[in-house]
Image: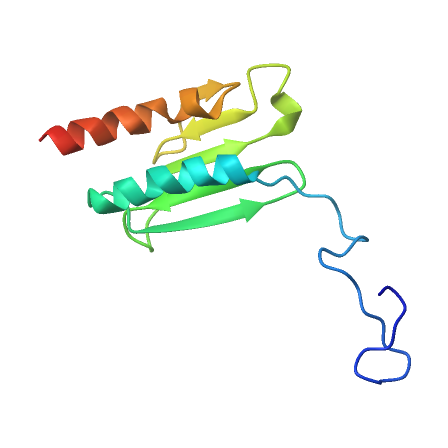
Length: 123
């Protein structure tokens, strides 16, 4: 498809998505995203979270969960592959930006949120 005309317009170029010329970016794979969104759905059902945002950059991907849209994120989960060999590529940040948990496995980093969810459900 690379150099084909688009809609008969002369000189137009059709690029595949994503643009192969763009900078590479870090993203969540399907299983990671399913795990994060599953937790998000359960936190929404518990009344803790109401909105989320995702950011994909060249160094890191992050998922931020909000109690209200206009506030700081209540929690932010960050994937930074460059730290894979050091303290782990996963980090959980709290509302004030403090590091709550770091690790090599997503499940371990999500554990403090899962534990909080269990306490909310028990109450």
